[in-house]
Amino acid sequence: MTLSEAVRIYVDRKRSLGRSYIKSGGNLISFAKQIGDAPLVEVTARQVSAFLSGPRTSTVTWLCKYRLLKSFFEFWAARGELEAPPMPPIRSPSPHTFVPYVYSREELRLLLKGTRFSQKLDACKIGSQTLRMLLLFLYGTGALTGEALRLRREDVDLKSDLVTIRGTRFNRVRRIPVGPDLHKRLRQYVDSPSQKKNESMNFFANRDGTAIEARILSKSFERLRRLAGIARPDEATYQPRLHDLRATFAVHRLTVWLKQGADLNRMLPALSAYLGQVGLGSTERYLSMTPERFRKQLVKLSPQRRKRRWRDNPALMKFLAEL
Image 1 (cartoon, one colour):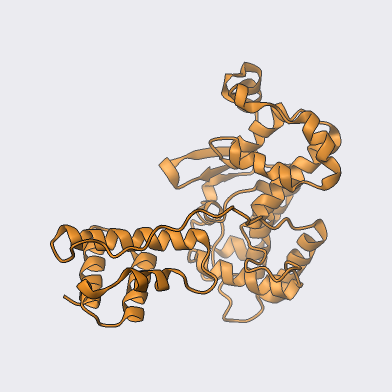
Image 2 (cartoon, rainbow, N blue to C red):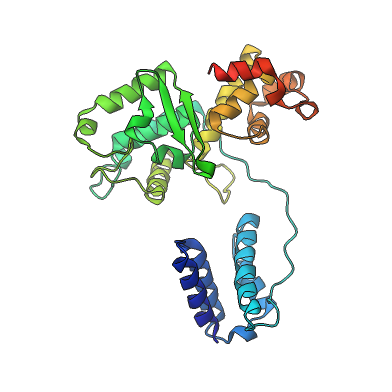
């Protein structure tokens, strides 16, 4: 059996089980093309290592591809086609150095202003008004991009100033309040002539009413970012992303609380619940991204959280229930 045949059979089997297997299948096909149409038993650990260590391959991507190939080879080893999976030693974990980009308020204004020009071409599926409202929504709520794209019209209750956010993991649903500024923008968006004509069930939709694809949205934002002239100053591999609006929301919120001398014992769990995060670990990392001038105040206000769980604080739970 050749490698390409083994890949085809393996991918077809995964898809027959109801999985789309698009990205993983594409990686396996790329692997087979790089190795060539060689017999499966002749694939070596050195060839696998060469495929994994491509240019600009992050530790996370390397590990994902490693696990994919390991499962692939173990599948065929279990069926007697291989004596053992030809896998190289797993790469030792490297320190996580990626830091989300935090947009300044001036950069946010440039992005919002740029939507009027970035979507002018007829080929642009997403209208400029929709893209602008999407940016405002992501920054105003800290929602994930996928959560915003799954938003239905009935999920936005402007009478009660509540938005229902639907996650994918464990079908988790949360209802979050929106402030007066975001309420005003959402009302203007809903009442606009273009939206009244749109019969789509999706709150954010393409010009023709179809659902917005995350891939198309990412490309539209990349074009907008370049138009606005926003980039990391150090030629980093990862340039500012749409997802970084979530980090920007959290950091800007924390900055305001720190200026006000707020109690982080009380406010961090509230922010965590608002963002839909199960634990505090993901939320606490935003503290390190706040302006340097708040460092001394952070040391004073930051709780020793490992000594007690925030869920055991009745006053805090009451506060969260009233959000």
